Amino acid sequence: MASFLLAFFVLAISPSLLLANRSHATHWKGGVGVWHPNEEKPPNSSSSVRDVVKNATLMASSETISQGDMVVVSWSGYLPIPQRSWIGVYCPHTAQSSDYLDYIWLNNTSITGSVRLGPIVNMRCLFEFRLFDENEEVVAISNLVQFEKGEMAPLQGRLSLTHNTDEMRVMWVSNTDGRAVVQYGPSDDDLSSPSTAIGTSHTYQASDMCGPPATVVSAMCFRHPGYMHDALMTGLKPRQKYKYRFGDGENWSEWFWFRSARPSGDPNSQVNMFAFGDLGEWKTMLEAEPYDRSYSTMWRIENDLAADNADYDLLLHVGDISYARGLGYQWEMFGRLIEPTATRIPYHVGIGNHEYDHVVGGEKDPSKAPGQGWHPAWGNYGDDSGGECAVPMVNRFHMPDGNGNGLFWYSHEYANIHFTWISTEHDPSAGSPMYEWLANDLASVNRSRTPWLFLMGHRPIYSSMIEMDQDSPIDWNRNIQFSQREALEDLLFKHGVDVTLTGHYHSYERTCPVYNGTCLGDLTDPQATIHLIIGMAGAIQDDGKHYDVPWSRISSLEYGYTRLSVANATHLHVEYVQNHAGNVYDDVWIVSNHAWHQK
Image (tube, one colour):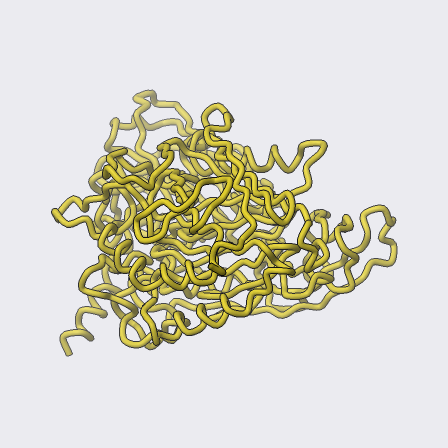
């Protein structure tokens, strides 16, 4: 009965009050916040939708907009009280005043004034803006704002590889569960008779997830995510340029283009990749885009892709994807953020703590983990997903081994690389389902076909960063490193994993070739795994304190991303690009014959 009453209370209270009481951790690893993390409390209003109390005017500059447009909202006939008057953003426009999507406090003390809002993202509903006075009462309501292509517009496109080099998967979101179709063909054709792929459609509900706020139905928390469409382009020739568009047969995306996969099994292939972790989407729609964080990361990658000689193959995102943590609005913003890149090259993802970790609702966990997920006494595995327990993740991304467990741990080959993805949020100990899968996967690698072996996960097994929770003297993340190392390092050493790519620490770090805390060889003759910590793509930076360890070679707290270029069977080029100036801070070659594990 007590648990029932608690659940009823959580669902009955105002979503804004629920979010106001969420912790605002500064490092974002175990804490969760709203879009305005520096404010003690967001506004709250109990006014009814149309209860206007003053004779004032509020006007949106455009009634019809396109995806990502800005809107100027102007008021007249009312003198705002600084930091006590505010404008709320509503989508759907019928929402109660307490159920705003976003908000901005007003500092302008003029009886006429304006704010510039955006980018406004198509979330399959009409937008409305409301002006509130110091008593939290509605002063004025704006005209409605709609999207030019309406709620049926196909959006948030993203590509991913399959196990077959002549295929490419495309997913997108719209407001219909009707026909899902992709038209595609060689880019030099006129495409008057394109090939057609028919896909499938699905969605998820608040009741599919594990706990609040993800299960709270509101504009702020769970909002219907639309329908996810999934289609497969087939019969592709190796490394050819293709044009494609997706939709329902009447409502179409713009035309995009990509290059098909390289032939598999050629040990001397060249492969060019981007890699990072902990990206997120760190702006409200009511402020300028943070120039040095996730928007800058994706902008610089888009510029790399636009270069005349660009020949990139895929992007690796090693966990902590959108940081939505139960707030559906953030998934919508994140989908727009990555679309220019994800529609051009395959966008591959792994599970992080902010997608998966949960403490209730374990029977709904798509990974089928026992109990309420993995919560060892020596770790800080909490409710970092805000109750999502990876449900949005497995619905929005389809990796080569599928959804469900095929997204928590999976592997695939590409040219001369074997990619192995694991979940650091699940039990890694010998005998566990993931460990047994990992051992079999690593043992199956044919190094004559794929000499390079990469392991992707979210939490690293080596990092020198000191990370203390605000309310605890224990460095839980370091404890987790030691435990992950104890469980997995012998397996990685035995099978000769060349490089691990991980995040979780919001910084960049590169180790020497290291086994059991000891450097073995160097970059030109590695005798153990080299670890790259690449969690610097957008989440708020760590504080820069480090343990004095012999295996750390370089670290940086600047936002950025990595470029990885496998030149042939033995040479790998690693570049860490910093967002602020675009300079390459770390630029090294790893030269390996991959034979050290055979000794």
